[in-house]
Length: 106
Image (cartoon, rainbow, N blue to C red; front, side):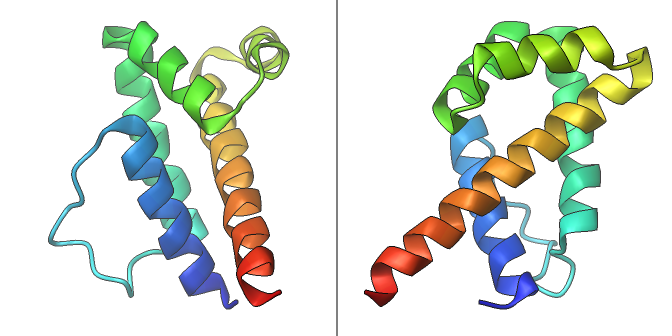
């Protein structure tokens, strides 16, 4: 699976888990892991400030452990928190996509 496809499938999982609508102006060419990190960091910053429970629910659905979340909150500086959470989410969603692809192939 190439990186663009992997990033695109991760993007769709993130949209579903956060209950977000797909932006019709975002084309497949724009979807890359760097872009996804920026996009998700903005979403997480908003949720940290305005709807922390929604963030926690999404993290639960994504399967980010409570201990991992506590670690991220404890050891990240203020402006790094959202980015570090975004990286953890992307890594977890990426793992899910790869695992699903492996099971489809067998």
